[in-house]
Every structure is written in C-alpha cells, then in structure tokens.
Image 1 (cartoon, rainbow, N blue to C red):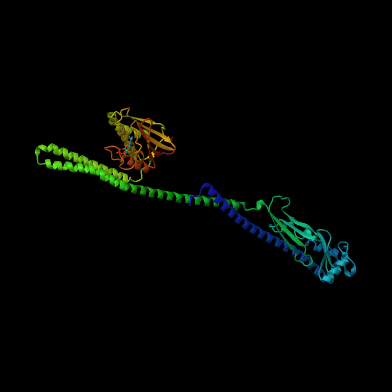
Image 2: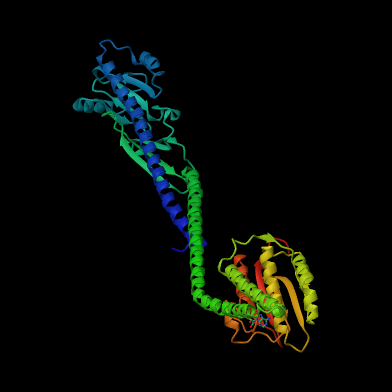
Length: 479
Ligand code: ADP
C-alpha cells in the first residue's frame, strides 16, 4: 500500500473524526436524555406528593367530629401549605369558610359524593377549589405547590395544566433563541383527584454540546492518523531501501560475468610477460656476462607482477566498496589545492594547464575526503590522457558550484571528447579505448560516488572536449 499522502491522511482523519464525533454526540444525547427523564420524574413526584397531601388534609377534616372553624383553621394550616389560599365547608348546605362560597360548590360536592373522592373546580389557570364528598373544600394555588428553586437542576422548562392553559412553573431557558434539539416529556400527576398533566422540555443548545470531548477526539484522532502515516512512510522507506539494495546486488551480479572475462584478459597480459621474462632470465642465468640482462628481465617481470597486483586491488575496491563512506563537510578549495600540489608539475610537463573556479564560495560538499580525492584524481588523469594526443590548447578546468540543491564538481577538458559509442558504456568495468587502459577508473569513480549518495555524469562540450560532473549532497545551510 502506498504511504498516506497529505490529502489522504486528511481525508482519513476527517472520516475518523466524524465517526468518533457522532458516537460522542450520541453518548452525550443519551446521557442528557437520561438526566432529563430523571429530573422530570422527580418533579412529577414532588408535585404529586403535594396533591396527595391535599387529599389527606380533606380526609382528616372530614374525620373530625368537632372540626375547628375554617377562619381559625386556615392560619394554622397556611404556613405548612403556602399553596393554600382558603378553605371552608358546607355542613347542612350552609357555607362556612375563610373565603366567600365559590359558585357551583353544591354541584361539585354532589359530584364528589358520586365519585367517592374529591373533585376540582378551576378558578383560573393557576387556582382551583378541591371539593371533598364531606363538603370540605380547599382553594389551592398551583403556582405555589413547589418553589421553583426546589426543582431538580436538570429541568429547564416545566408547565402544569390545571385549566386548559399550561401554567409555567419553571423557565430557565426563557429567551434562549439558539438552535437546538428539544427533549420533551409529559406525565399526569399521581393523585386521582388532581391528575393535572405536567410537561417538561429542555433544549439542547450549542453550549450543552460536548465541545471538549470533540476537541479531545479531534486531537487524538489527528495524532493517530499522523502516527499511522509516519509508520507507513517509514515502512515504505525501508522497503524502498531493500529494493535498492536488491537492485544494486543484481546489477553487480550481472557485471560479474563481464568482469570475470575482463580480469582474465587483463591478467593474461602481465602473466604472459612475467613468464617470458622469467624464462629468459633462467636461460641467461648460467652466463656471468648476461647478469645485467637477467636483472633487467627480473625487474620487468616484477613490474608486470605489480601491474597484476594493481589490477587485483582495483578490482577488490570495485567489487567490495569500503564500508559506508564517512560523511563530513569538505572544503573544496583545500581539496583542489592538494590535488594541484600533487598533479600540477607532471601536468605542466605535458603542457597541460589546470584551473580551479569556485562558483559557490562557502558551500561545502558532504562526503568522504579520501573517496572524493580519488574520484578527482581519476577524472583529472582521464582528462590528461584525453589531452595527450591533442594539438590545440591543453586545458583542464575544475569548477565547484551549488546546483539543484547539491554540490557539483565538474572536470572539463579541451580533448577530443567522448566517442558516441563509448558514451553508454563509459562506467562499465573494463571498458576502455586506450591501449594501456584498464577500464576500471570510471567504474571505480561511479562506485565511490554512489557510496557517498552522489553520482557522476558525462557529456561532451562544444566545440570539443568532455565534461564529467560529480554531484554530491550538500552540507546543510552554508551557501
Ligand atoms: P581507462 O582510463 O583505463 O580507459 P576509465 O574507466 O577511466 O578507464 O575510462 C574509460 C573510457 O572512458 C576511456 O577509455 C575513454 O574512452 C573514456 N574517457 C574517460 N575520460 C575521458 C575524457 N576526459 N575524454 C574522452 N574520453 C574519456
């Protein structure tokens, strides 16, 4: 699977966040609804208790054989029942009460007797008479059944319908016009004589939404997705590296055959020469006068043996590149100064001028000093080899510059340039167009550059000459 791109990661986060946010909202809603339901039930019980208390008072009064007069009774009951506005009774059809007789009382008493329980006679939206079969009657104010402060805090809006029009007992969300979902619950009061319906509503406005939980989830889900993306990226990176190692191993293997043939060819020449020189020396050994010739033959074979050893050591460097190259910020001016110090006398003897231009002073390539020196030496040597047969000006121009975020060394010469058929095989081991060449120089340069995460490119210059460019990572910051 491809690592998460920024857009895909954002999309995944959005989906994850939305799913989580919906779940959190649902949990919050269930929670709010539960609290609302509990609060409404508590309010319903509180109001029901009051209405049951009214029935109990009426039953007690009916049971008294010598009840006190309503005018005396009222002040003693009122402090415990703030909702009680007045009371009275109708013994033998004559009204005695703390208030004047309400109209229709006689009919209400008869209705109560028929039903065998108290009945109500509404006065207005809040007040009502509760008339018992005994003729005892209470004038009650529904507004004062329960003080608003005593209702549970989970309630927002509560109405009680005594006489058709709902009477507002509590309104904590008055004037709140914010949009929101409304919870509503309707229940009748418990007393059979006063089964007034109560209705409770609560609007879930934005300030009651679970913002903190949502914010927490947004951060947590973002961290989750970022972590997953980073994990995927690191896995993809590890896979890419494995793939690169595999590819380079394959590339090495494919050149093994070519190299084996090359080694055989290359070593054949010095070994044949060593054999010839040693045989000649053996033949001449018995003759004292031929001693200088013997020395010469042995020296020549030693030279050939050295060449063979040289070929083998270069091969080893090519096949087993040294452990991962060290990375340090290198000073290009110092590197070139040392190169010039070593090469200039010999180049001058061949009539070759070596120049150096630092187009990005202060910039530093990152690499291994020894490897970089070896590459530059090889490129300068190749340029010198290319110039050996030219008639015109003999110039090798070295240049250092920052380009495309990398540090580039270029080695240009005014030689004949690279032959078209040589161009594709330039870096292949044992490819050479020179009689004395081994064809290992550029292959080695390429391997060394690769070990420093760099690369070498070759191109021809107009009107003549070749240019090799070594690109290396640049040490951070310095320009
Ligand atoms: P060698 O120098 O032993 O031939 P190299 O790998 O260094 O091996 O070079 C391979 C070949 O690349 C050379 O034989 C030559 O044909 C070509 N070449 C390298 N450098 C130059 C150059 N500066 N100008 C023209 N041809 C070059």
